[in-house]
Length: 133
Image (cartoon, rainbow, N blue to C red; front, side, top):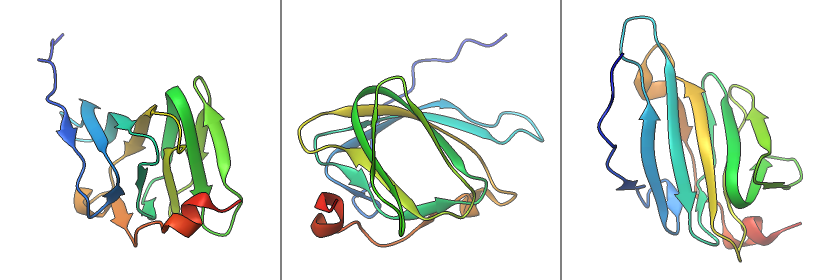
């Protein structure tokens, strides 16, 4: 058994996020063959990811607040604390907080064979895309 020190909170980069977004890494691969990564991600109201996809998919579990999540070409989904969403491998999507609520989720995914290709970051979500529908 290993007790980890409390992780440092880091602010996510503006190249991949709009607004203020913070990350605490909770789990990461430690031994050969392990792939699981889990992060606690906190979004200020209106903050969001850029469009992106994951090589092996992603599960999001909303722990507080109101989340907006959208896959490209599909309707935006509103999710609340206690709800879980799954985005399949390769599906372009974004997620973030509604404009009037902080939001926190657990982001869970498996790394790709080459960890650098686990997430493919794309363009920012425009204000019009964020506000639509």
